[in-house]
Image (cartoon, rainbow, N blue to C red; front, side, top):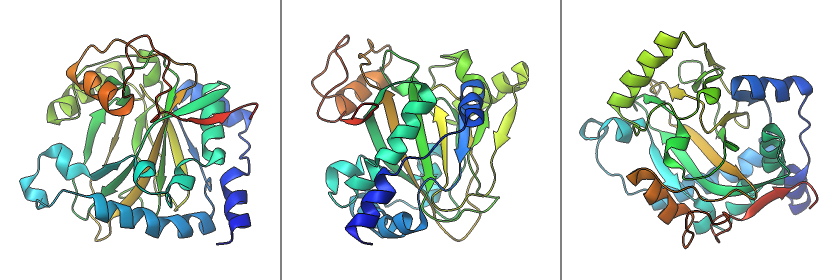
Length: 276
């Protein structure tokens, strides 16, 4: 892939329609087909998978892991470890979509992570991402992009439409108990669920930090290779953590910052600003 093509694919703007913007505001999630070109995915997929193999420390067979461990191999902040992967994570094209969905002028990195669901891997329980994040805003969004084509039975995640408007539903971390509690909540409130089904490599979903979501297990013989990037609105401040999970995230993803500080640590670089 030539440097010119790479830069074009990273930086060429994706134009969101009014329908997409309104759907995200209403539902707390959208599908963006073809956000990354085939050439871009083909270039970065082997680099990302190589880093996942290099950095992975999980050696136990699936049957010896808990529910969270069975759900996926999780490798975080690849951009810190690989200058080769960093341009993909920092793609202006992706970050601009995140900013426009949230209606903010700029976005910063919270963290990235590769989520590789192995053959036979378990389901991902119902949860809200933002229970882990001590950030004083509702303007957070996660890009979730498969690096390989994924069939209907592996599919996109399932989202609960409108659940982002319910805010902080439960402090429970991802577990069997969170799955049961939130499943009961969804059924009691009669909240609508959406799964976008099969996805092509380079398609992406975006979901808000408070949007309830889950993912099925992987009954196929192939690994579900997904890359995610979490964005937080620029000029957001650190929230006083109210759980151990949030204290851990503060230390890990915003090193050196204290409650009330602007989120601008070296691990939270500016990814996009409307005027840059």
